[in-house]
Image (cartoon, rainbow over all chains, first blue to last red):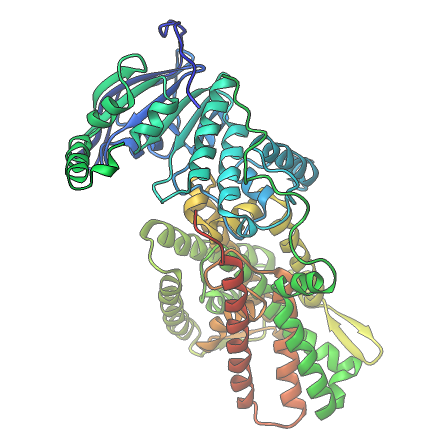
Length: 274
Length: 355
């Protein structure tokens, strides 16, 4: 699976643009004057070691954290993503690192949590159960899970299906921008495949995708642009044409150590170096 | 390269899961939060039905329901709060304190009953807001925060009542203006045969029905379920965690006010001698009704059945002529059984692979 080679040179106007974004936790800066533009149909990978500001960036885009300085522009117009609900309404949806799945709730309640479809008028305004169930089945089918009972609790789902639920929710609500914060917990190859597939599928549907990952090889597999973060600042912006996977691995903090580790290992065990 | 997510290997699943037939039915029944309370209710009805047959007469039922109604009203509110993962032990003292406020305003300040009820409701809501804001802003365990509220209110009401009235209670309010209409709303009776059923039973059933509907059919209810079961996820998805929590503390305080009002209008007076245990009773009833201590699961119907269980056991022990102190022991055993049953359910619900 390789990403399509693009030659538009990034001339399309950005769907989402961050300008001079600064976030401080107390007096400690988590992000310093970060600027990035996300374009429709492009995957921007954010790489950096732990503490480089990746999760803060995700938190800003999903409305959990308000920036101290800087602007967020959606289609060129400044927006304020005050709450997660506001971000979702603006068409920015997130696949959270912890998936944000409530195990005791049913699948459809999980899918719509925080943005439930309603019908009727107050005081009998209530959840539209039929619509919610039907949409859930459709949204889950979109990510490849069929034959699902939307009323079963999320705890009855297999790990991969819980992943699919988080992705299906983000695809359903993320009309413009999809933010994927790759789980830091160990994943199987099939789970990695699901995450990467969802990212690529979202690009094919014309969404702007921000893919946050620790793994430069996976990033290079799908990414069009690469944003390297180090201590809250942009350490480099690259396009797919600039680097290959090995360069990218080296550029990401910790890459040097990995190269050294590889050298030591191949010296001791030549059979590892194919 | 066209990429399709339609055919992901290993993620599609065909057909339904779970064993069909009787074992699936059994699983569903076991998954209901109200099951332990229902089983307990059947046991005590049979046990005390044999020991004290007058329990099963219409008059016996009326006496049981009169005990169960205020308890059930408090337990329903505490259940919603517990589903959101919080506790409130101050319901009992809010009941006493708000009844005292109403009584002082009518008996000493000469107010009519309805405005006095409005002011005492505002006082109760203030207690709820203080509880809720303290819990959401400090992140302290709500059990301890409301325990502090309980102690403060208990001290203030005991001393305050004695300062103002010179005694530990206020009686003889039944000639205050508006008493008749308030009494009709909160403590009128319906005669069935030789027994008289209180209107509080209707209030209790109505509140239980509304609470069930709110919990399972509204956005607020969905937020309550999510906050208790997965608070972090709820926050990430934009559920108004703080606002919902404060609203629930206001709800339990309102339930306290309602219980106090029911008692005040039934007795025509109030005494400032609350037991420390009365605040815990609602919690015990809610847990026996199927609430998980960790939140995320509970049932208003379970709380109602549990309140009935409490009332039957209490009246049964009275009618059987036993020492009433046996009741506490029985309640403790019931609580322990409910905790173990809920814990088993929780382990089964949470037994899922982490992803």
